[in-house]
Image (cartoon, rainbow, N blue to C red):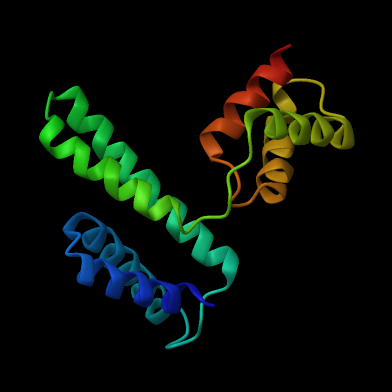
Length: 150
């Protein structure tokens, strides 16, 4: 089932349940998907990879906003942002554990023959491609830095 079809079903369920927070998050996803579809080639469907990137972007936006609101002691605004991020995350593939990410990065470092921070771009490129949608870019970056500095 495509993302748009599952979104429609979730939207209906949220409307029936009168869950305004979930409804708002789902509408944001649907809006972003429709905008991305029309921005490319008319009404062409997005690939699964494009959908995942779009969802990750939406989650990152929500988390960044929540962080800013928390820094300004505005929990009343941060809580809905975090809740929306949680709703959006449910549409992403299951996320890898830190141990799994570390193992994949170690394998990539061995494959590329990376020897230090100068090879970070090479490692990041391969690792990000391998874990597309299954790990946060920030987490990947932190682990790659740790491994290459060691």
